Image 1 (tube, rainbow, N blue to C red):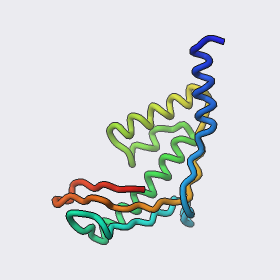
Image 2 (cartoon, rainbow, N blue to C red):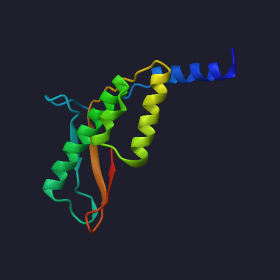
Image 3 (cartoon, rainbow, N blue to C red):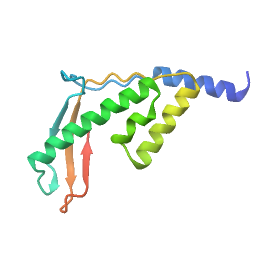
Length: 128
């Protein structure tokens, strides 16, 4: 077997083994549940409306990622991802598509914690 074919086969096997399992529940609307905690964010507090928006958008992003990976449709990612993340995920989908694969993400929810929230509100660091 040629080295490139062997490499392709190895990548295919790794993709088949790549099923993401996380923690508890999917909501009634099919979106992954997100428990968001901003109690320890520094140097400023996170407003309630911002917390709700982050939980909503974080859940939508995971739902879009699952759909994109399952259908090999990177366009689904455009509303939730930008820049390097969008580029890497699009490349991943194109690679798996070229190998005739799909990835199924089993998402059981997220416990997200805000670690940092900039004073001007332009940046936030999250831990999932």
